[in-house]
Length: 251
Image (tube, rainbow, N blue to C red):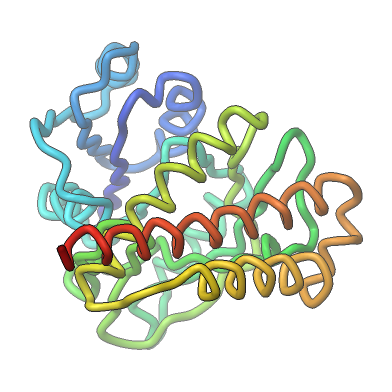
């Protein structure tokens, strides 16, 4: 049984070392990097990861498929640079992939931190993500953002969580919000979607209600409120940017 760990990076030096060390048990670790200007490449070389530089940025889905195309293992584990595998999760991965039954992929619960707090509600837990799969049975969608793994076959679930250092502070939160809202607005525009001020307000308000009340974000304390507001703002700006894109291209 041969394992491949695949990672895409861009200036990920802050968290990459822990990530790479947590998948050191894999037979190969493949990193596709988008010309990082920090110490990402040096960390990869130090820890023995196979580093491949990408001169362009095709989007999250296509970039992950580039990494997947370089993998040679029977089983592939896709992990982000701000995530890491615990010893218990490693043991479960090895056990289930050795005897997967009819399953060709597995979803993992992901435990994410927001401004120093591990969220127990707010839609952030258990937050199942499909990351372990047979190389010949899955491929990432071509979406620029919010990519998904398209699996041909049955998917099971693991019990041990994948750890995720999602948001450290408000500056990082605002930067991610801006990037993701822009990318998602462009993706929606390419699909022919349109929006208005009313659409942006409606989506923003609904996102807050869903995160804070329906997904019990209020049980996550002040961080739950902060996350609900951040999600609402992200949704609002996503559709506001979509509205402006539509107007720009209609001239």
